Image (tube, rainbow, N blue to C red; front, side, top):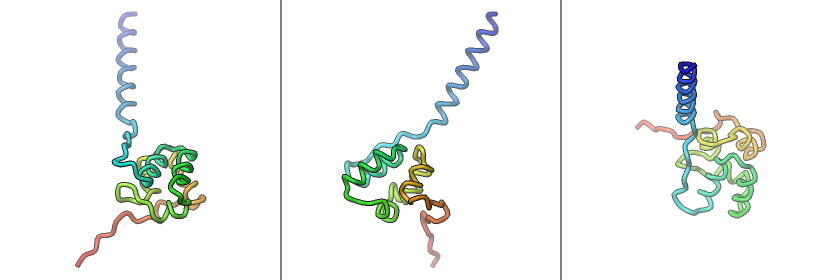
Length: 111
């Protein structure tokens, strides 16, 4: 009976460590700007927080989709990479027309 208890404890600790490794990164804003608030609220996975941040900034979804970048990448790509509930948030921002292939993060120009 003692061996089974030890095995179960080891299995439990192993699953706990694996869950900690796969957790998404914690995002911290570098300033208090409107765009930072929009990026963080979009990545949080809450449409309500995103809507409130957009309303506070006085911008609409079209502006957010086309003009706002987070850490140098378009907002929808940022949400896809770092956000929670990313499919739902990106569908909200793009009115259901989000496709990752439509966004170019960077282009290298050879001279």
